[in-house]
Image 1 (cartoon, rainbow, N blue to C red):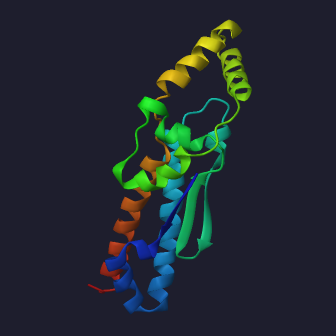
Image 2 (tube, one colour; image 1 turned 120 degrees about the vertical axis):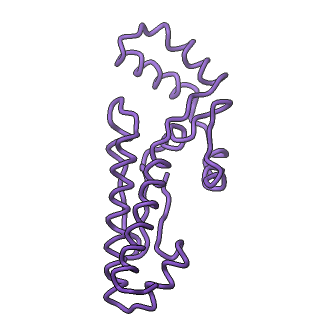
Image 3 (cartoon, rainbow, N blue to C red; image 1 turned 90 degrees about the vertical axis):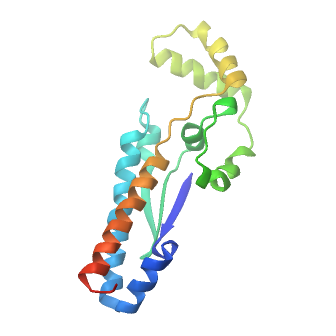
Length: 173
């Protein structure tokens, strides 16, 4: 599950920076990189940690100097982020983004039950509790545990602040 952030998404600030010339654009690119790293840090602060699989896969990847991908490269990241079933919670600005995960092929029943058995073992819960827990998850869903969205919001806020400062520093207003 990945989101993409680039400077051009902030049209007004982007236009002011482009008028300033290559030095200012280079500084803006560095500020974007710093903001992407901030987003990853905050996402990791919000990510649940069981075995660390999700936490360890939260990262940023440069696509270009003005475009970064931020995400968690595990198949269950979207279910943790948004929750499932009746307990799903999707931020309004991410409805389109989240839709791509709703129609994904479901994993097998056996794999799901096995994952719950392993979770029970790690938490000292008797294995016979796995089936009722699994059925509850299937029937009621799981609570959302947003991690990327808080990171995205923080990173975007920091990027805007940083770019506004660059515009001020170079008298581009």
